[in-house]
Amino acid sequence: MAKSKFEYVRLFEADDRCLPNTWIVVRVDGKGFHKFSTEHEYEKPNDIKALSLMNRAATSVMEEFKDVCLAYGQSDEYSFVFRKETQAYSRRSAKLSTNVCSLFTSAFVYYWNEYFPTSKPHYPPVFDGRTVLYPSNQNIRDYLSWRQADCHINNLYNTTFWTLILKGGLTPAEAESKLKGTLSGDKNEILFSQFGINYNTEPEMLRKGTVLVRRKIPVALPNGGTREKSQIVQEHVDIIGDEFWNTNTHLLTVT
Image: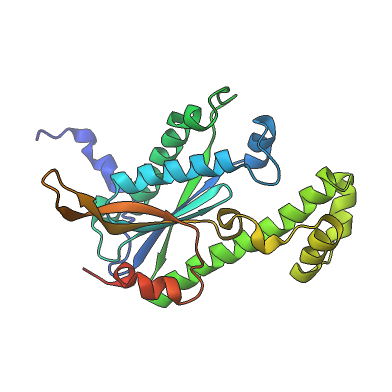
C-alpha cells in the first residue's frame, strides 16, 4: 500500500488493547433517560414495553458479537461480558465499546415501533459506553452481583415512590420526604400495609433484571429427529447466589 508523508500522524493514536486473560465488560448506559422516559410517557414506575425494547437491543448485540457469553440489563443500562480469551477487534477498548454502544443504540431505534407502534422517538436516544476489565471469575461475578443489587435497591425505591404518588395522592416532594432514611423493610411495609402490595410478587424482570445467555436448545429436524443449536435465552433469575453459576458452568470456562 502506498504511503504518504502524512502517515506519521498515526503515531499519535494510543494503543488501548485490553490486558490479556481478563474478562471484558462493555456497559452501555442511557444518557438523560429520566427526561427521555418522561417525554415519551413511559409508564411509572416501570414500563414493560421499554424494558422489552432494551432486551431486544441487547439481543441484537449478542447476535453480532459471538464472544459475548452473557449480558445483564436493568433500567436503562446493559452490561455485555466478553469471554476472557476473546480477540474481537484485537481487544482494543475503544473499538469494543464504540461498536457495542453504536449497535445497541441503532437497534433500540430500529425496533422502537415493535414496542411503541403508535409513536416514534421525539429525538434521538443517546447511550454512553465504557470498557472495564475484571481479572478473576470472582471479580466478574461480584460485578454482576453489584448490578443486580443495584436493580433491587432502585426498583424497590421507585415502586414505593410512585405508588405513594399514583395511589397515595402524594406529591413527588412529599413522597421523597416520606422515604428519606427508610430501609428496604420500611418500604416493603409501606407497600403492603398501605396498598396491599407484596413486593416479592412483583414481576421478576422488575426485581431481578434480565439475563441473556447462550444455551444449546434441542431443535426439531425435518426427518423427525432433533439437534442442539446455540440460542440466546432470556431469564429473570438471581445471579448473586451460586445456583445460576452451578447450572451454567460453561460461562466461566475458558474455551
